[in-house]
Image (tube, rainbow, N blue to C red; front, side, top):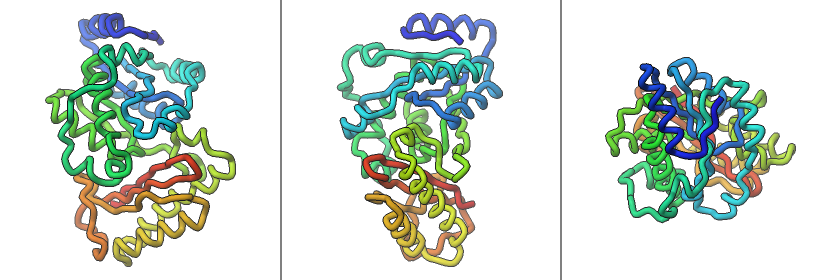
Length: 285
């Protein structure tokens, strides 16, 4: 694996690979890597000739500065994992390399409805920051394929929208959520949970599974209310949302509706275990 810290040297190397007729797969991360990230690396190695992974903790997507400060940094371990996974290239830039003119950028991405609900509603400015850094990374790497994880479901739809807005030819592949044996979705934020909190956090997966099982017998309001109550009764300090939405548009279903079988749906949860905010989702089809 070759590690690049500077944009120019990375682009020179990618250019040489392209001249050989090779395709480029890209997995952007913020580090603290786990099996979920590595599954995307594996997918990229199957689909593309050269796999590029970036590790960059992007300051512009944290609406809570304390959350940014507490984000786990495990670079040495990440490098070992990427080498073992046979990653071709690691891009490890500084904030100054990504934002040479500073992080205050005037560009606004017209994300429409996607930015007004769920994560967008509870984390103002978050998706603008995500688009800002991914747009920059796409310009730098210019990959043929971008690999994203389903756990960040709304973010996947946002980045598809970004690619449409900037007229990028990059193709998006979304990998399935990788879970621990107890069902907890793998996440870098799990490192901040105690053993007890980690066990309690599995209730997110349990309520999502319950929604999937009971979807034909109860209304959206009944399903989401029961899920929220279960989370609060099992150690979660706050529930931002439990929602059922159209899987393609993320349009929320009316509370009095029984989720139909006629279209793809997704159930989503955002909730706090102590100070750690966790998200998860499951497709209901």
